[in-house]
Length: 317
Ligand code: ADP
Image 1 (tube, rainbow, N blue to C red):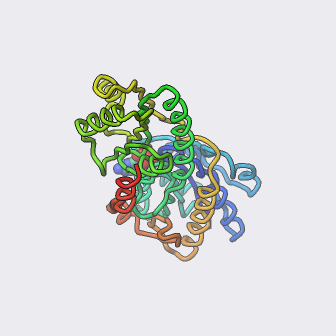
Image 2 (image 1 turned 120 degrees about the vertical axis):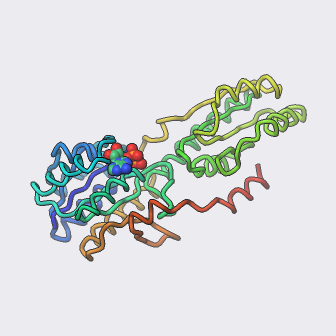
Image 3 (image 1 turned 90 degrees about the horizontal axis):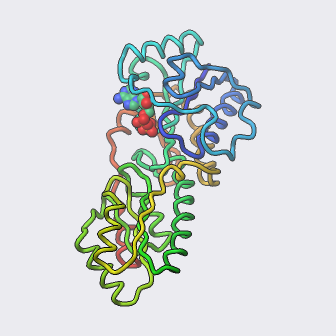
């Protein structure tokens, strides 16, 4: 087969490991694999080149994506997708493996509907794709968040301060929930818990009166303005309070072994599925087993609530 591979949307550590696995599995199976630069934008512009085994050497442990990623909102227009299909035809590429998040999946679905054989690989630090237990990049972002929160804890404790730390996740609570548990945050606020500001302020005030030296609050992005919240905490609770938005630092870094392993497994699996004639699907792992789900269905699925972990937080934070 002649297979194209691209990365699209937000970058995530481990995307390179997935590209490597696709290229090497393809070549080992007798395929030709083409790297497409800068996501759907590069596809439309014809930024396509054949990859050898050697072209993906030395990338396994590097963050980001050697293919580059870009956003092309106009890909929702059939006319623009037509240009992409023309490029695929020009290079005689019959199948496309798209690594990214749900926007990338939507683009892949539209191409599938137009007759291109597509596979979606979940690459996003947010862990917000319900057709897999874990997305490529989540483990590394979790490590980065934990490292930052541990460091902020040191200084919070020395200064008897409350630290509010905003982590990414788009609308998925996992990065905040997991990092909050791993770092022993006193409060974890996500879209599952909601923010009860009055209760939080009262509780912090009581903590302070009881002689607690510091408080760590881990909060998901898109919940509230954390800088304003820090001012309110300072005014009400008796703690000095600082807000830190971890931001794009969470997107970078050397991928963890978990992300590399997941990327390698999903990259190989995608090529295997193409050979079996299974396309228009998103791959993932569920209970550590490889799974595929029609992309259309994957896009409709919602993550199940973190019932067990939320109960755990109530007991130990
Ligand atoms: P992610 O894949 O990480 O969710 P985006 O939402 O930015 O990132 O989507 C990545 C790209 O996928 C977009 O720039 C666009 O090219 C394509 N895409 C997103 N939504 C659609 C859509 N409704 N139809 C076709 N293509 C889309």
